[in-house]
Image (spheres, helix red, strand yellow):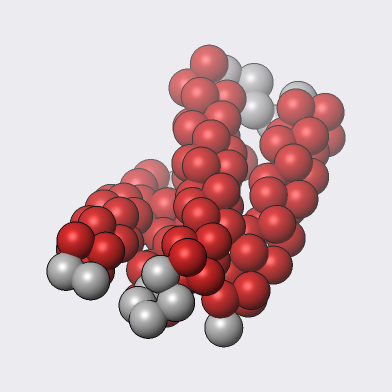
Length: 123
């Protein structure tokens, strides 16, 4: 299971590059305001950071092989979907209610990071 987080993280990084390039080039006529561009870029930034976090999660799982870090891996994945993808869609559609979903993704990120620290500290 440790390698799956590295594989998913690498796939997610590739997806973040594709989505970032699509936003910069394919959506340049849609993301016309500084506000929408900023929201899209923020989603892409957190997408990248937490894609790397997935890979770190897998590496830490291999280093500390007696610790199960699956929960943090799932939380990072859920966080990317809720946080980043809600921001992508919000930036493109300007459907404001999507902004209510974003904090749940942020909470997933926070819990995942704290979970890793807690599990390694208690190992």
